[in-house]
Length: 373
Image 1 (spheres, rainbow, N blue to C red):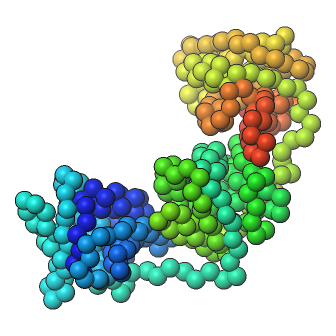
Image 2 (image 1 turned 120 degrees about the vertical axis):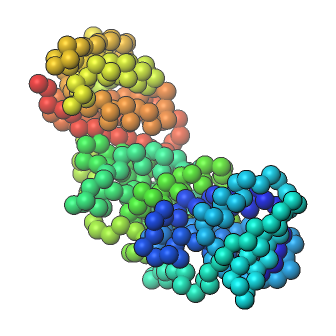
Image 3 (image 1 turned 135 degrees about the horizontal axis):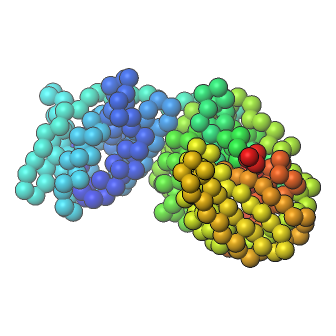
């Protein structure tokens, strides 16, 4: 292998792939990047066996094709110290060493033969979904914070993709809160899968810089491929049956609070400072178009309260929530004004945008209340 690339372009490609490299791998080869040069395309691959990330960069100056595995941390750290300039790669197959040369110096890095690098899985009867990068990014950002972290129910630890004939819905829940993000303009082959958090975070970061670039998703019962721009993310899916989320979304919460999202979020943050450290409980008292938020910690002899204006349709109500969960939901709802629909102090609250500014998009969140002490 022999080629010349710009140091900063190469570093950016390495950094985008390095997110998947495990810090300590049970298999040594997983601590390496796989470099494959064919024609003018250099494919850089990283994998932890569960998730694989590939990125392709164009190389103008290619003298010899090849395929090697290079230590990921060593190669990345070497390029972090280089200013922008052309860098030449030359491999010595007899010594298993790649020589990296720049204007004022050289480095010799050992490489491994790539035969042991894990191959991509083959999909069986795959299904397909097309979605724009910004929509997929919005869906992941709107749901990933609500995923669980449960050993006994691993299916709750990812984002559920529910692809129907008329829409596609992304769902996440940790049993205390549930978030649904639905797009009626995204349709594909009917099916579903649960995307683990690690590849979801990788997709979120790598899609953030794209706009309406198309993303092609192909999946079967075990694996999913996300292909976009010059990248490919392949991941093993979480197996299991996701709970029937539609059945828990309340339909008759008739006590409705309409309020500025910023006002209720900031007030909750201020009051929550004085909440009990063990429970994090805050209490809403709603009446006469006023929402009063209170918190107290009797052990620490501290308390706080704040009243904000709202529009309220319903009976006077007092209900408690865990402040951390409420703040997470309010921080991730992308609307200026929201409505909170309540039934009674023992049933889940439904949080939605007060007005749907995007007719093709629907977002709702459920939050379980805390028992008032």
